[in-house]
Amino acid sequence: MNCTFIVNFVGTATAATIKQLAAITHENDGKWLISKVNFIDNQVAAVIKVEMPLDKASIVKEAFQSHPDLLVKIVDCEANINKEESIYQVRLDANDRFGIVNEITHLLDGQGIGILDMDCQRVFLAGGGVSSNLFTATMAIRLPAEINIEDVAKELEALSEDTRVVIES
Image (cartoon, rainbow, N blue to C red; front, side, top):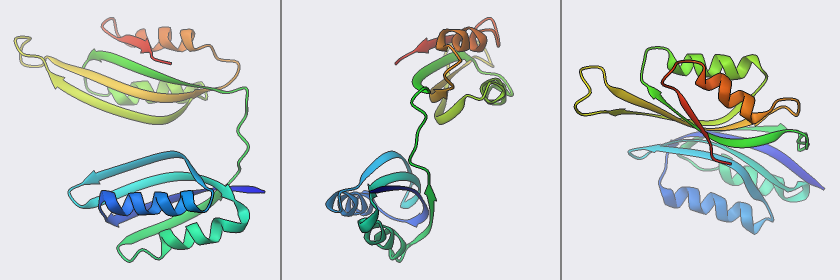
């Protein structure tokens, strides 16, 4: 029988630390379903969803919790994922403006669309004037079964006349 849990941690670490924790998970027949690991200098913040055999979970949990330089929180969760939901990769491009991230998240949240990952970038466009910045958001979103991705793309594009949405998968 398998179990699923989420490991959250912050602290001092290197890529080798993450590799070691992944290896311990793999050695105990587990896998990282979703992971988001961010480094700034030698500081790390991570959220990892792990699925593995219940009888080996304590070994992996202990490996995370016993790391001396990490503050770790582990939460057990349901393994069941509604098969009717769909996950899409979407890229949104628009002229940068105040509140754009709030507009995007408000629109998606209002329809029960889950944001699994959102990576935002702002790029200065040379020759375009003082406030010529391009905003790009790359998102992984989970749609409820009753929502069509094409409709979501059109609604996002309606946020402003310069907004373009590309459905990547």
